[in-house]
Image 1: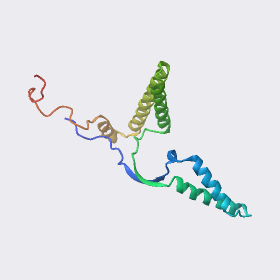
Image 2: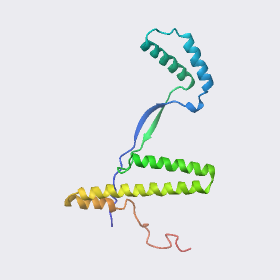
Image 3: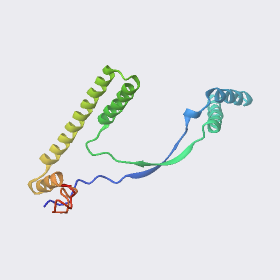
Image 4: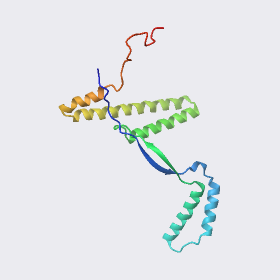
Length: 171
């Protein structure tokens, strides 16, 4: 029987981020308030002071119309073979999927399916290269540990019952 060992994935971590909801920003009202605030301020003759003044007025107007919101997100680390090229391909796949759903055209469906296949092959190639490099860089002593990690099953492959009526197979 195989052990329950498997390749460990790093634990997710939490991060506190600050963002603004620009989708709910009323652009016309924001421009009006920003322009009126700039007119009320006395312009400084120095360029650096003028830039600071503009940034302060713009920042306070922005804080009024789209206040920053702090939230906690979970950072889930990707697999070691997952790289920027995979993120870009996945993003493109999702963009093409949304386009196909919106248009419902056969050509958009074919383009989307081609991107799905491209992304799948890209992942398979990256996983293969990653594991091949680990195997070839291992010495003979560690080679069996690496192969055991790659081939071990993380859960029980078969149910614990040995009678077919317990499994509800034959009703």
